[in-house]
Length: 351
Ligand code: MN3
Image 1: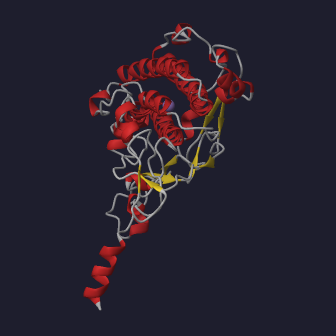
Image 2: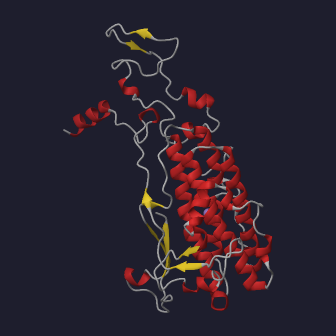
Image 3: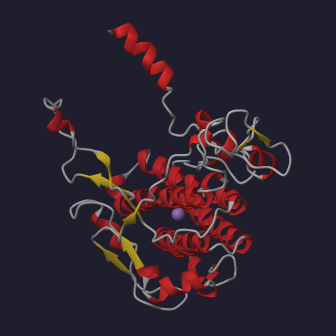
């Protein structure tokens, strides 16, 4: 799954590290081969839904933005001795955001599976129909089966899909772009170094992300997309509340009174409501060893502003689920068929 942000309790030694073991004493990332959301396998491909979900990956208010905003703010944090709980909170949420880009990517990849006809061009001419069309099929001279002499297995996708990059610029998989094909950019990162400004920005960013999630939800009824979006609505909601609480602790302003933005409860979305019944909106997991980022609980405490439930920090990783296993897609040369003639050529040279 996700990643764990590991901050060892020991501070960097004053002397120069003398071994690799000694050097492993800073903020690091540990990765697990899981995904944070239990994603149902779609009954059929849905490239239009995949295109809409791209907004949650590389859009201005997408998960790459939340990940990179908090990551850079954590890298550049000044005054940790005085403001440690805020640093711990930002580090912790940054680590969780990595699991969100994983979940978005897994969803896009599942939605694109089967979007083009899985076929191997090297077999054209020998195995029969590869790209049956209404017209254009002819009988092979050597084979009574019908063979398309001019196959174009990506034609429909490239001509008809709203997000052609899925087929022309990737292995029919997720990209760091928004739903219109604009690449994610570092200009979406705000890390001013002023804590009040950055926390205010994070609150705004999470509210914008929540708006984007609710719109992506409304743009597709695909169960896989909605399961992922429902999860992100709940976890993003946790981060909205966390930044509101951080601002309250820092300034005394009652930011929680602004919530929810947009003015719709997660409980209106069935997939999110189910997770909130299980208490997912009250939990801040610690994505790290027990002795790291210990002051998160100084901010994540008290009651949830919407339903009054008690907020808890869990010193553990959230549940993980298998990462989808993506089959080969020979029509996209993904991962890439080996040309047997080339192998023969080099085998001869080597012998
Ligand atoms: Mn997120």
